[in-house]
Image 1 (tube, each protein chain N blue to C red):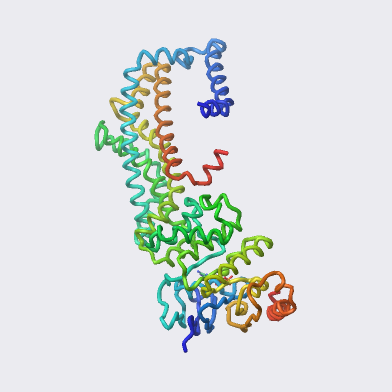
Image 2: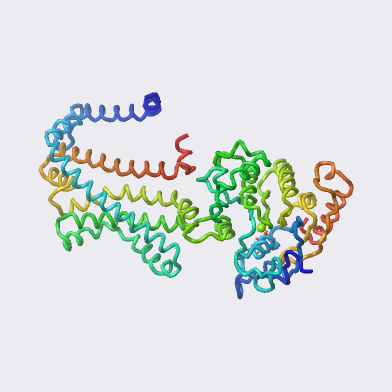
Length: 255
Length: 259
Ligand SMILES: Nc1ncnc2c1ncn2[C@@H]1O[C@H](COP(=O)(O)OP(=O)(O)O)[C@@H](O)[C@H]1O
Ligand SMILES: [Mg+2]
């Protein structure tokens, strides 16, 4: 049987001639529906490049991406996407920003009012629906952006270091919120990060990427029960996963 | 009313400064024995100006028409070209460098030519105002429409929305703050352009009035003309600033200044 998402011998080289930068690949990745997969690797190894190619937002140099056996050859629209720098616009309120996703897709706003309230409530933002992004803290903004990326119920969610700019404590809190939301809807998530702990805590599978040009070093299935709260994080198994991944990157000299 | 009192109170330093400035001016004229044909006192400017009020108001209307007409035409052309250049790679490689190089010439230098081509009427003045307003508007518009963040671009692409829809829901509102930088710059240029055009060749308008009365050794009336010109300039600029507040109240830089 074909996998839900199949990335085959995917490779990206930017520029040409002397300015050539081999950014990623070639690499082959298969992802099942409902998986939470982390793409873990050092800065500049091509994680964002991979994610954009999977989303059809960037052309690959060679290789292919398939969703349910359908070849991706242009922007995929049945996805939710989120970046380190969020896509909230300053002239709309939190609610207005969530509605932006729906408006751009030509969906009827009236049908979604309850869902907007519910998703905001699930990340404790229901009292901030009418506030503007610049009135929120960085962590609240990222939570709002997460609602924006999820409101249209995409089957696939692509997250590119969404917590990258937050402080450690806020990251911890938002991770838990993300996990809660994911466990309810079970979308397929591709989560790009360079935090080992974050990857182990959230994912069902972690894919380790080598320094640039990023190739797959190995995949590690994380066999821990959800929700992965503080108790799980203190378990020996969790710490073993973190240590083994650290060893891999130590070998490459990136940590 | 309460708001008005608060506003007056918050501006008391500025008001005090103005009052002090005019008092100093008024009393330094007799104090330093400055002849009135060099620099008249504010009270005299007020009295003599009031006697000439009909003419001043009519001329203000004339200059205002040139200014506003030229500004609006420049706004339409500037935004139109700005958007076209931002969205067309061919225009970006041809018209854009052309505009940038013309931007270096002082546009006002064309004024005598336009007067000789088109005569003393309204048209050459409007053209000059258009010319001095067009470039700041078009160049800032190009900058504005080209500076959408990478993330927002990727985001709207992932929604599959049409170009028209993304233009009105994302690109246009995102561009407005930078566009207004150009609009405000142009608003300052507009009255300057109209005035200089009138200096060079005209038979009415505030610029014409100021150059005539100055030639007649009447600095009091010249100052009265300058006063009206200042009011006109402030009105145009004030109107654009008000539009900015109405159209983009969310814009952060404005919020910072208000605080
Ligand atoms: N548009 C581009 N043009 C040229 N080089 C690029 C471009 N985007 C990324 N790169 C290069 O590709 C490499 C991988 O980048 P990226 O995917 O952003 O890494 P990561 O997300 O893992 O930090 C980097 O060396 C980067 O400089
Ligand atoms: Mg990146």
